Image (cartoon, rainbow, N blue to C red; front, side):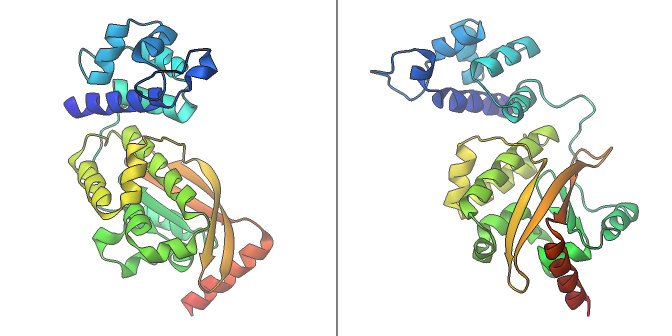
Length: 277
């Protein structure tokens, strides 16, 4: 419980520090720290300054949904940030119970294999890749050639320099991934798990970039978008991605990448055929 309250307080402090007093008609001079003061946020959220201070300090009981809603509006949170605030304040829904996943069922693997030209992976809440298809092995990473502990999207992103040469705008991609990871672990009820804590501590030690991004407390939705990669054999490829939940397994998520144009699809097909030969 203490770790959960610490996470809520840290998130509130971080978001409060990012608000510009001038945007709300408040004097910006002679402020000891950036952003709004605690009492100013409390006023915007229509709660007592003492109660808000306790929330930031991890004291008192759990805030109600109504209080969290007012805080989200007062702090001008985005929709993913609002969801994350509710996860930190109230916890995931009662049916969500995080459990580490060792693998996937044969039936789910067959779903991946049916997508011949679309790289697809199954990842856990800690972003360990536990399932993939031939297209993913050809275009993204051949996870079968990696030790089990290295089949982690964040470890590959922040611990392997070769990944940087295959991505456009590495810094933006890294920030997006860390924000999406933070949202994923909260949604799966894994935010306070020892597994997540060990991974975060490991990455903070290994990568100053990850440490800085983690401290920023950014939260983003990982629903869909475009992934631009520089494949060493196929060259630059634009792949549209969509994320899906695995029903009944809140710790698992599926990401499917589709070629953005017919020309890219042709290059993807040629690459997969060459890898399979």
